[in-house]
Image (cartoon, rainbow, N blue to C red; front, side, top):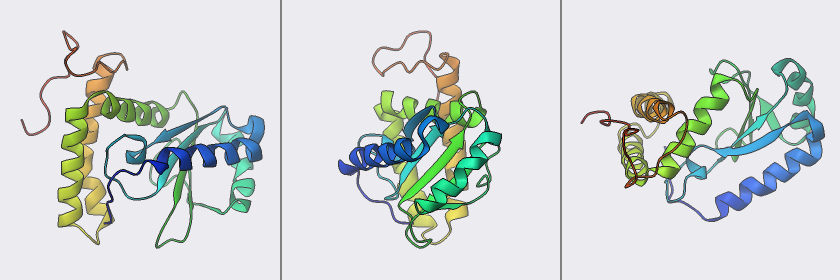
Length: 186
């Protein structure tokens, strides 16, 4: 598992891809979000841009797949996550982009934004997540499934913590009754 230090160009690469998606899909998408580790300042990550685009309905979004395939994306079903259409860009051995199409009212949309926003607002939690990712990458360098499964407990904790505050992300140092409580393993 290749993790690299955060790169300032990841935000720019997201913006460029989002502009291409908006130009190609027009009104077919409602909103485009940068998600995943490359969307969190300072986070080490696999060097691929995770993008999520809101669509009116998954049924209608299926009609966008041929356009996305023409842009170099490969349709990958739901990628094991209910409530989305998943696509990947770049050679299988070195993907450059992941794209999820999801309804903005879906659990996938909500959870992805809660997790991203929680890490952005809580640097200590982001640091713990980074450390966990490093350990898992060291332990499972060729086993993506185990690497991903090893992150699940932390991800669930962060999403639950964010949800307890109604989705608001209270920066560390300004917590009160909305404190998310103990981290996994503490």
